[in-house]
Length: 150
Image 1 (cartoon, one colour):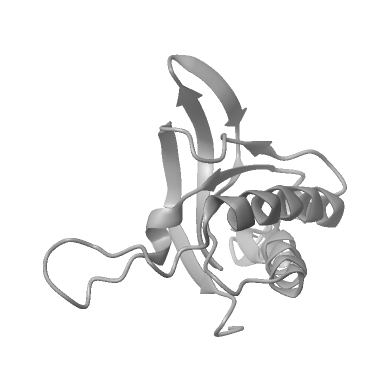
Image 2: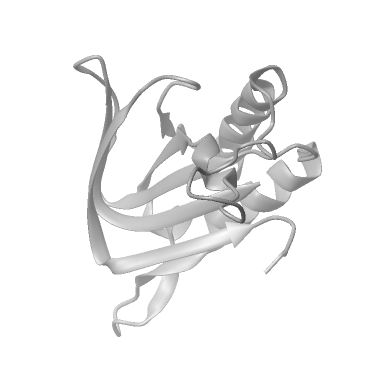
């Protein structure tokens, strides 16, 4: 499982001109699910995202989490994060989990993140063509791969 986490002042997702999710200050999470990802990856990643200290404290140091801040979280499924560009110019997505596997894991991730934050999260729609708009704050962008556990 790979996640690109961006600290934002605002973010939203639109599907066919219908805004499906929007947040103010918080985190935009782009989530890619790979073959072999498990419920343990979900638990670890949701806990990590909820507790990452990416927001400034009163001294201006990145010392507060989105949970501490009470900020929003918008999660977008993005299988292209699992792309391989080793060969040729066209990315290969063979390592991405198939939709029948990935969709339930994505839904479990949303539920686990809501539990970790003790509040709802906004999301896009699994498998849909989406337009995502954001104002990156900082900019602060973190990439996490559950296989690395860093």
